[in-house]
Length: 193
Length: 190
Image 1 (cartoon, each protein chain N blue to C red):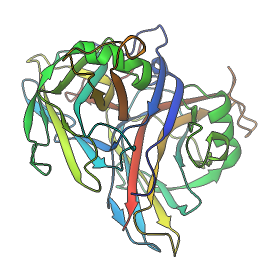
Image 2: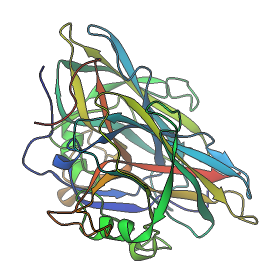
Image 3: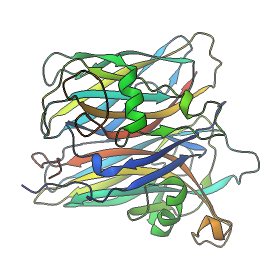
Image 4: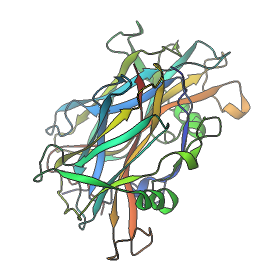
């Protein structure tokens, strides 16, 4: 494998983890080894909590320009109704990393790509999602490996899930009136076959 | 119904993922077991390339920290599928968690289990697992927290020690937040 796992997650506030709509309980990739030009799917398995409606988001921070995120979906198995496509919101992702609770990650200096260069694009539900206490829900996205990526390349990073309780202006701000919190995260990795 | 939540005091988590084994995923065989039942937590692991000069064997550990009620972790095992030919029980050693925490939090203050003997540090490209069970009390219960894993490089004395005051070093494989609870147990905080 061409790259060592090398990341640091700082100042994650665990107290935030169980105070939102959906908590991360399990995660996996459908394929741990992926051919260049192909994709693998990340499954974030969630359990619903009891909270006011808010936007759900997933924030994959995977190292590498060789990977693109495709088709992020909330409720992929349609437990709460039709599945909902997630839309990219780079501002939400950056605010979450900069000021959100429990969402800050960076890459240590010996990594080829340091923290500020790691993608911080969040993918959110268009509308706020009502709580679904104790229900199991799955959010997914595909990670497509670019053609020509050398075999053995490792793709590593951290994937967060969280919520954004918009104050009504549609702008992620990450303050008391516009809370952005991560409700779970996992380190993760897969390899280019 | 009893709720559980993390302690009100914030737990600052500093975590450096630097190990030669990557924790790539985590799941339960049954994430909502019945009261009195047992479920198994499965940590998916992948071998990476090690650093030059690094010892080729180290203790592998699992740390669990969080808040719970009516849940008993037990039966920690490394490589149960014997992919690395290293299948074995893991033993409780909270000292490993206490010292690993400075590099690999969140571990300190929780329960830590390590392999009985050192295992290969860089099983390159191998996909394997470590597992443990949790038994739910008859009255039901739940656990919310983190499952961490990593490696302890002992300096030869068999004692987990502060890396700043010994030859011991610790590396992280990864961490995942998780929730497991009996059906109907309220996982939300107060």
